[in-house]
Image 1 (cartoon, helix red, strand yellow):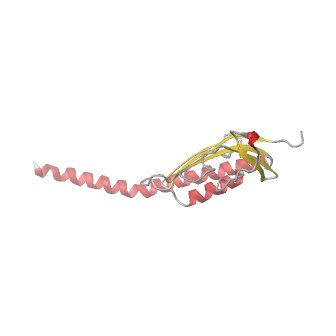
Image 2 (image 1 turned 180 degrees about the vertical axis):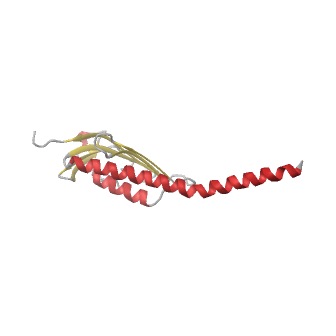
Length: 163
């Protein structure tokens, strides 16, 4: 009975070696797919030439506030001019954005840096119409707790100042 196990063990070993050899190729393919999506969506965003817009961003992580707070951001001529807690817009302006990207281009730059760092897991949903990242989940190390970062963009509104 034991002599029949030899071919089974050899076959299993060959399969394991082939799977291990395929892992870098699968990782490379996934990275290429991420970069292609990033590039095409950034080009879509840039093609609209939107410089005046409002959006709400919520960054979630195990870090200091304003993480977790939905922040309404007002951008004019490509620069943030105001930011406030969207749960209480009458409380006044002046929310400190901290490390939270304050424009869509800053969000693309942050996403670029994070992808370039090679995290274990990245999930990105892009806005179909404008191309900006609408939802981002990054987990630097799958084996670590509390290192995940998410960004959610909502209530995007391009502003026509000529109207």
